[in-house]
Image 1 (spheres, rainbow, N blue to C red):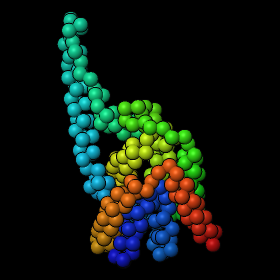
Image 2 (cartoon, rainbow, N blue to C red):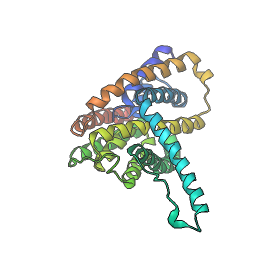
Image 3 (cartoon, rainbow, N blue to C red):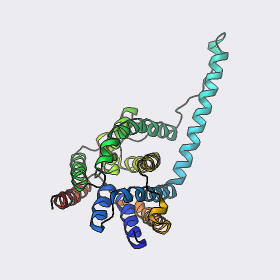
Image 4 (spheres, helix red, strand yellow):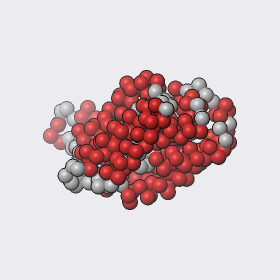
Length: 289
């Protein structure tokens, strides 16, 4: 793989990861066009994911730090309450427990944890299937068409205005369940989270923030999972292309996130759906040829 190819794939990853159009589907299509083997591209995708992870952290670092801080404080409050409970049996009426979910950020943090439960389970269960069809244009094309269908359905849902305070943990579980299927090639992670968030009645502002910040633990998991699935080292690919691809995905992703926040909306989901249909059909035709 040349450095120019690596930069191109990194830029594609940076753009498509943060729009509901499936980065894996585009990488599979372009890798096939450039004649890059799937076993090699799998290791390269790990490097690209590191780049997009850095982009998300750079844009949302304030929210991420606040969420981590509140999570640590919640754990501290839980231990404090446990200590009070253990020592308050004799005079239970005098015990005043600390409220655990005392702010929107604490609710947000717990919802993210709830979302990761079904994501992890479903992602693990479909991993063998996903691994078997990695680099397959037909699988990617079908995944893109599934993404398009969900985007279309969510675009016709009636509006709602749920924020962290009004959202329920079952909503977070639903979003995580949909996201779990994004491990299949062609199914967009952002498409799954944005669509399921709208289906759950989240406000546009909360849909975007929740979907992008949920990227962080999800991409970390993908890096670990995909790293264990490939036996190709960065030395085999070349350190230069790996670093170039990672840098391209990070830089492009950083600017694309800011653009995506402005462009992604329920009505525009229909435009993204149409795009996914076109790319999906191209992928299927490419496979048949």
